Image (cartoon, rainbow, N blue to C red; front, top):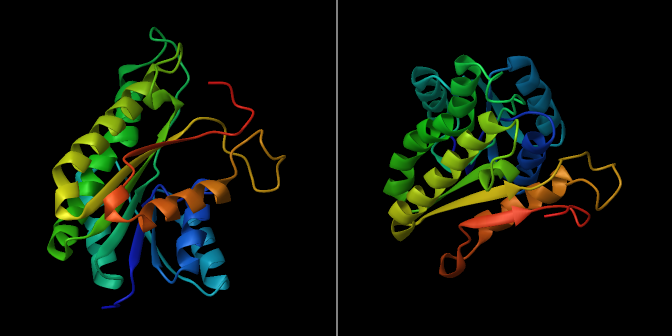
Length: 231
């Protein structure tokens, strides 16, 4: 079993997911890439490995407890204990209440919130044993307010925020840093104009800084938005 420090990114996809993977790989962390699409995971793995990093792909459905448990068991077996969990899975259904089907509403809550609960349960035992660890949740504007046509998003993201608060209050005294990051704006690409969209690389740098914080000054919640965003 490798002794490398391990980051598990559940919701590893193009944009923010790959940016976080790149940032932690530069620091020598082994990257466990987790998402439903094996094809997308392989593309990210190839990029990380091409830059000299270590990455493994683990196809996981964040809404199914057995799939999540099996995925993290494989991470433990192949890479070792997870020292950093990034829950970046999310879905953004746009529909009014009368158009939003029960199935879509339930799926949105499961991806935006329930999967984070399942993932946290998998990594907490080893973090508690080591008396250290970091759990980072990707939130959204909908974490703070429900907007017309976005109930499916906001209910799940509200729940994710509450989960982060509960986890932090329970486990911070035991050495585990939990932080919820509100992404208030559209994530663009590093090449797009500055100050109009969030750069995924800039967000990833913030995730790294949160992980590096001293326990005497931990952040629970942080809002990120481009300079031009109205709020």
